[in-house]
Image (cartoon, rainbow, N blue to C red; front, side, top):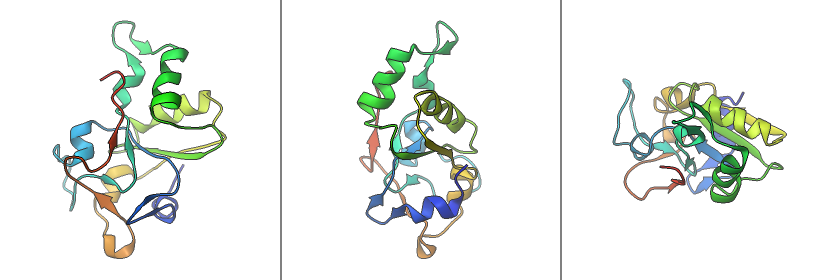
Length: 145
C-alpha cells in the first residue's frame, strides 16, 4: 500500500519522481467527471492516466493476453519492473487491477494508494499535495481505448 505521505514524498509541483498511475477514466483524470464531494478535481501532478478498463478484454470477460498487457503497461506506458510504481483511482478498487498486472510482471515495489483520489481530492497544495487539472494537463495512455 502507498499512504498519502508516501505519494506526497514523491510528487512536487513539477511532477512525480516515480511512476504514479491514475487508473480512472480520462474524464476523471482531466477533472471533467467530478465524482464525490471533494474540494478539487483532476489528478496527482505527474501521474499518467491508464484507464483500468484497457487491461480487460470485454469480449473474453478477462484480462487481456500477457502480450497485450506488456504492450499497454511496459511499451506504451513506459514502465520498468525495477521502478517503484503507485496506482490509484477514486477509492483504490480500480487501481487494484494495475497493482495486480504489475505484480504479475515482476515489479518488486508496486503499491496501491489506499486513499486514492477520494483522499487526495480533499487535500491542499499548500500542504504539499499537488494536483493538476484540465485538458492537456498530463499524459493519457490510450492503447486500447
